[in-house]
Amino acid sequence: MPSAKRTLLLLALGALAVLLFAVTQPVSGSDAKTKARGGDAATRPVKDQDPAKYVGADNCKVCHEDLFKNLEKTPHWKTTLDKRGPQWQGCESCHGPGAEHASSGDATKIFSYKGKSVKQVSDNCLQCHLYGAETSNFARSAHKIANVSCLDCHSVHSAKVRQFQLVKSQPDLCYSCHNEVKPEFSRPFRHRVNEGLLKCSECHNQHGGFLTKGLRSTAAQDQVCFTCHVEKAGPFVFEHAPVKTEGCMACHLPHGSSNPRMLRRNQVNLLCLECHTFTADTPVPGIPTFHNQAVKYQACTICHVTVHGSNHSAVFFK
Image 1 (cartoon, rainbow, N blue to C red):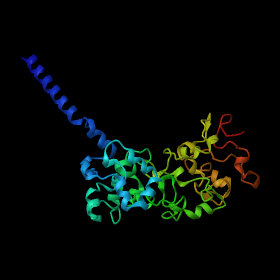
Image 2 (cartoon, one colour; image 1 turned 30 degrees about the vertical axis):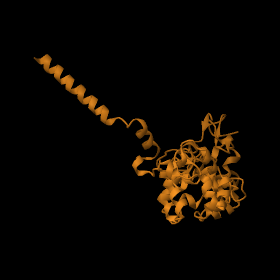
Image 3 (cartoon, rainbow, N blue to C red; image 1 turned 45 degrees about the vertical axis):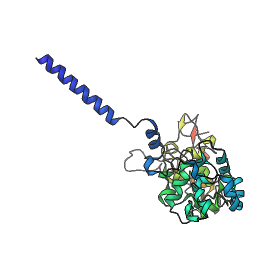
């Protein structure tokens, strides 16, 4: 009898385990792919599949020749070759089926972006651009949260900058909203953004990501700096801890500074002493006795030359 009860108990536990496994498994097939790429399919715009409702881009050209010519110069023109059907081709890939509009001339019978909400505009654009490497995180981006529309930065028919079809070139486009940052690029020591040597989007992903300020970076916010400053990346035998724990911005201002090398302090020793100083928790003074902070000792990097990391010295001597 005990053996029979044990068998029944094991069977019951096995059935429960199977049920829990089935409940906790992710949705399979196309539903899983849809949710992974942008949420429930029911919450996203759906293109009309009826080919009879579409007239083709050539018919749009009859009335909208100027817009048609502008479209021909853009990457969106490639949609006319899309093999998935008329709902993905030409003008109607963005404006929806146009047969009823073409036959009646009624502007309300086709989707127009004028007067539409930011959500409607973004959802329409994301039907194609949701899966891009740059745009896949747009739903979590600061621009999305701030109610910025795709058309605030991009224009399909009248772009001023051909690359990415921007309404204005960088950095002026970014300054349209981020005007508080503009003076930082006019400081004596700065990244040459205003001169066109660097673009805002080289450090920030305007379409969103997992990091603060949309940085194209690691948690330490340094990898984006190492794109240009490769010699500072290491790895080194002797690492300078702040570089790994706090990133480059522990010592440097990223946009511009009044101090050489874009440092946060005008004296190198004052910057170093923010970490290397006396504290209540350290029984041994942080500053050795021979560092008396007289003028000749005030530039720590005269001796500690390889301050970003060294393969030769634990105190970063050359």
